Image 1: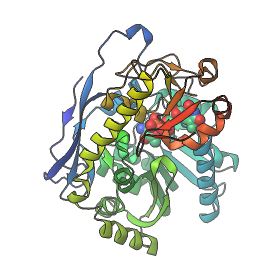
Image 2: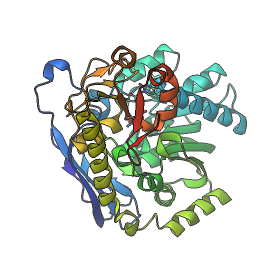
Image 3: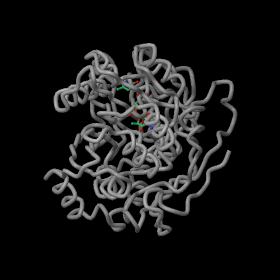
Length: 412
Ligand code: JHZ
């Protein structure tokens, strides 16, 4: 298995890509390892990030075939976070009201995972179609009544659906656009599938917050692109959609934007304000990213110093959340079982396996009360509040939670 290095921007085709950060070589963040393979050295691939002078899109340069990322090695199930489920329900209810959806409407979700979002429309008698190539997740979605096409979405799939007479009133693409190597085909496919007066809503972490809050661990091979409002505006305009509205969710996945797009141009003041804010802060420029590499080094050094100091004082350390970002943090920092005994995670599909690269064992959350480690590093820091409230008993018994990002900090 090898990673191909791209030479042209995946959004605008420019050959002027300027690298600004290298995270070395890391294993695939969701390629969890069977305990029998503990002795092996996992394949790892360069993780290098660049800015495009043509359209300002931030992107990684090495591409792993999507089949390996999302079919062969993908145990992420969306339904393990109550906060994400609540956010998704609110999103569905807002769409039902704003778009006056009813039994004659069709909602398509790309990367519908285990049906965590579409199930809300099904409850209201609205027709849905999920599209997701991950076999276990597609199966779980079907089992709860969400019809799902187990495929990668792109212009070909859209053409096939349109040929069958399918047109979507709403297309939802949450946390998937970053995963797509052929961005233009992806957006053109959505433009094709969308009804004339339909809406596309797209959510993705905001690259402005990634930099501002030092969220370097969200950079891994699954995430080909890191979006700003400016780069999304360019991408939509060039591929048959118009960016018409934008919402900001500061706490979701470290800071998420929801872009509303349509076939017709109807641009809101919120879009103009957001584009102006990004221009003011310099988000579209290369200078914005110039000192990021140094910031990453500083975060890693202070996390290592903190954990080593606590470990040498005799404290036992565990971690919470076998998240993809956790794999990235541990591998880029070189933190293994010499510092962290085990990681806990609610996702039953990950329990019993080892974190890629560093091979720390993954156990159910109950292990925190069984073992009562002194410190727990929250690798899924985006859900820190939810996790700490679930683990009130661990804290009551004297346990300590640490968040690693933006700076390592004890929070309980
Ligand atoms: P979480 C995934 O990244 C993968 P990850 C993907 N590439 C992507 O883009 C983002 O999501 C959006 C567990 N957990 O969601 C569940 C508990 O155990 O931050 C997950 O394994 N108990 C598609 O993997 C992990 O933590 C809990 O109470 O970085 C969180 O992973 C909660 C809330 C979560 O995404």
